[in-house]
Image (cartoon, rainbow, N blue to C red; front, side, top):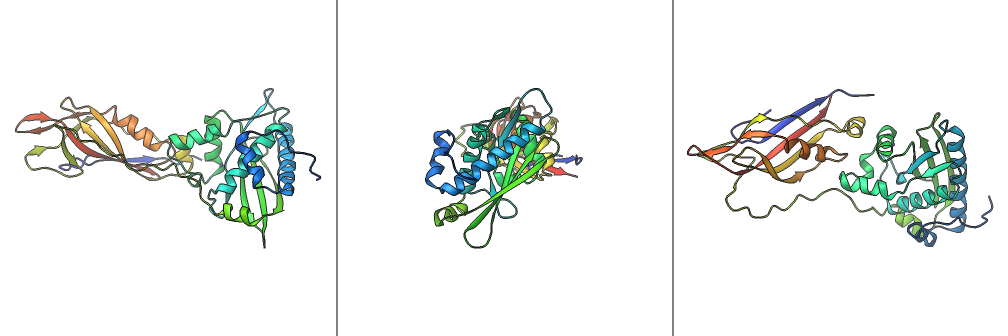
Length: 306
């Protein structure tokens, strides 16, 4: 839907709703996870290793395919709804490496794949509320099984780690509990860096008239010739994500959409879908005194799951 004369393109996108022992020595782990050895106590490492062993065996037992199960471990979260923390990331890194050490018949995917996904789609762990959404991301990254865990503080300086494995049939859960130090407790509430995007700075553009979301006397706004709507990503649909993506773009005298900058993003791939779609648009250019001229305008896509 176009709302003249301001040319704030507002695309309302309805979408039907379619149904995340005794310690005998640590296994070999990557340098990334080795840093957690400085944080985890010996008892905590032993408990986590035992948990990884049990989970790996259960995944292998449940796997009915000839190929090994491919597992992706998500950041461990705490509180409700689940939020990420530095300690949760350390535990997830360590658990992933321990699971890999016990991976006879199970392939553990590098968690850097998840980091890259979150970065590229401007997504936070907090945006992933459901197992179905996490499983969809896992499948997109090549996993057949995902591991999620919630951290719950039990009484004074005790922590429960409640693990869920989703993907195989039937899904299952397991848990451990260990005492936490003051350092662990502090890191539990320490946030991790966010991948949310700051609005892009727009450099000077000589010859381009800035209209934004408003109108200018004597200048006709661009109008749509072909303006398709972007589609939902499967994971955004799973999370029932509603909201708006605001882009700033130049509409050329040929009616093309160029020089796109993100003003307001949405996670889970919706910003990318909006950008990809806007690039396909064809419009009648803005005019002044009957002559076409390039203008920079705001384009707003509104995503709504019904």
